Length: 546
Image (cartoon, rainbow, N blue to C red; front, side, top):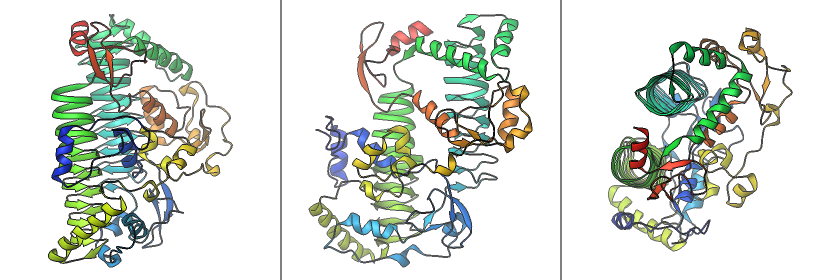
């Protein structure tokens, strides 16, 4: 088939065809990348704004800007049971398309201000739970003293990291597990005191090294004395920004020369994609674990029979199609933010509900259409009519249109994973939020000292300007203490540009066929054929590295 948006040819597997028949759904008309773009464009993962709670009038931090057309409640009110979403129910108008009616409902039903649960001193975060003393993170669970990081689980004293789990005292690390006291370590597990290194397993006291397993005291991939290791580390990690730049340049050169495993998978069977663990029968899936019988999906955790979804499971979601963020749910299609619900279609932000269609912010409800309550018999008859109507209008089997997204494109996860220029986003029908000029004032500090030793606590009162985008940012006492503890220089980029830089070092969610650069065997990998990295098949990589 050919994608109706980007015109790229794509295939639909027989397994997906059978699943669509099972749930009475038409086949997708977009390629996987454009499907993911649609889903991610419905989710604001980072942006926070000050605005009024529409229930209390008090100022809150929210994912919705002050000029957003939606009604937004602070979390205690939204979850508090003092209001009922069915009060906003309305009849389905069979003379009009469904999506227009849903868009009108969106503007009146209250929305949850932020996604912060069971956390202490974590107001300035997005999508965080069971954490304490965290600042400006997104997608975080069970963390403490974590700063400016993304997709983190059970971390402490960590800053500027992404996909870093069960780790402590880590800075600028990506895709690591069980790390301790590591700086700029990538694609590594069970390591401690490792710096500017890539693809290490079970190592300690390594610097500027790659593709090592169970090694201690290595510099530039060669054994070294403890004194040599400490001399190199202390020379480069002493709080000097110029030394940091030197180390980062060396790291990038070493990283480019390293031999790459064609995928990152462990304990998988019959899977394609990348960063998959303990999974089977997953096709074109990424950043997932304990997944089974899934296809064209990203971020799965304890999930089964998931197709064309972003963030499903975490835990126990089954039979979901074309959904964004589903937890503990069964039999969903075209839903966003669904928690512990079953048999839902085209719903948003529904909790512990079942058998609902085109509804928003329902809690503990059954048999609702456009938030209007029906009996079981009435609901079943009406849903058949609505689906037939949507088939006639061409809406059935399509995700919500770009115009229905509650956020501007550059506020969403889509801008991280599938970045667009403003003109291109507008051409696709998305909104765009222009820069707030108030965030680009002249800084009060002319220059940050090169050495951390020359920085006083007075810098916490200064306004800094990003070296790349010129946006203002400030330091907080918590991060300054971490920099001093780990002998790190002050960052010259704002948190957004640092996040963007880390994203650029990760491969895209796209598979390419290219030959192994050792044996020439064809491999399916996220490294495109025109990229300069050295990429090996599994057998050649294991033979070379281990």
